Image (cartoon, rainbow, N blue to C red; front, side, top):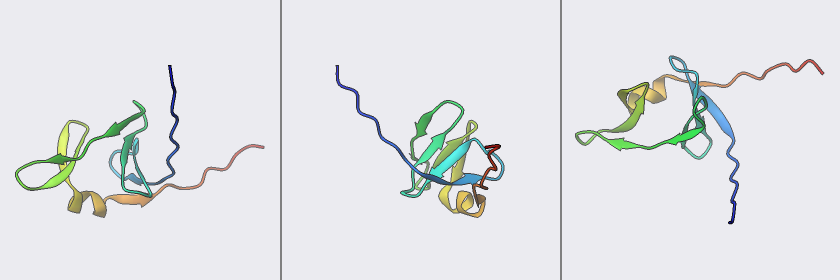
Length: 74
């Protein structure tokens, strides 16, 4: 059995669904499930299914925010 591990850097998250993270290369991850969210083509509109509802890329770009840095206790 061969195991391959890939590490991505997440820079953005959605304002209305903060568990959906976007990497610097444009991939979308669901941090609660730990899975990659696939891009969907819905009637010639490209986007993602977020929380069971389709959102286009143009709308999602307006809802992105930079992930704030967290202060660690040590």
